[in-house]
Image (cartoon, rainbow, N blue to C red):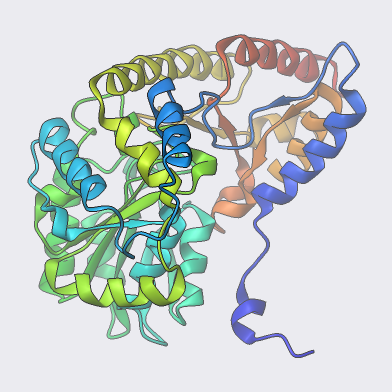
Length: 397
């Protein structure tokens, strides 16, 4: 059977490959004194709050399980619109919002709407691997531009201007970012958008960790820059609904009918039950709980980053959002005689029973020198992980 070249271009999602290995080992060590601690997957340990769970149950009991329109429930789009206004002081009409089957569907719809075969999209290195694969699946080419700690591991306007060529169609940014947890400074985001707009390109911004920003300066949406900015968002991270597979896309009004047409054919509609449940995300009780959890994520960050540094795993740019630590492990690898972060991750997994993610997925420039830790686990688990890492580093020869 012939496999399409499109499919062949898509590399494995190494985060999940490592996760499979960690899960297999976890079964072996489950009854030992050191069961596996998972700091590899970016999934909140919190579940959906009570009101959200109750809303889902009520939807099933009331028979609210049929198709919705492809763009999602009007009431849900209106509540998302109101959230932008009250949380970020930005007016985003509900007509610009398309509810999707997770942020993944939003990215796919955006890429299929805007990218032609041969188009190039500029992205930072490091960045989330699936984003560049969405570009590739749309027959475009993701052009990774190496970044550094000095740039917060984000693109700058000068880099975008320098890399732009006749094939460039736009940029795909993420703020806050996976794997670094860093955001683009608002002034720099504005300058990037100005460069892109001057070139007649598109500004796509992955904002799925937006609500989890810990600092007011970075806790802003790029949608404030203008109606031509396209934002991808999700109920998975801030709203703690990962397995519910629900997200949204904000597009200019003129693109709405095009995106809707694609959504009708590709997805029919997002999960109806998840949509009715998500309505309860915006109740005052739920929003208060989300803010309490955001404070907990910040407390975990404030403990974990200094603890890593004390072990020789420096985090060059402290994350200002999300729940990741992008740690430079080059000195540790050199000290232990280990080749790179891929081998180090498996050593840590097997010896310390702590699952972490090597940098391989996230870029090609310096990713082999970095490990990504997820701080989405409990404080107790983070403290135990640090204790095990300390023993591992002291005893490994």
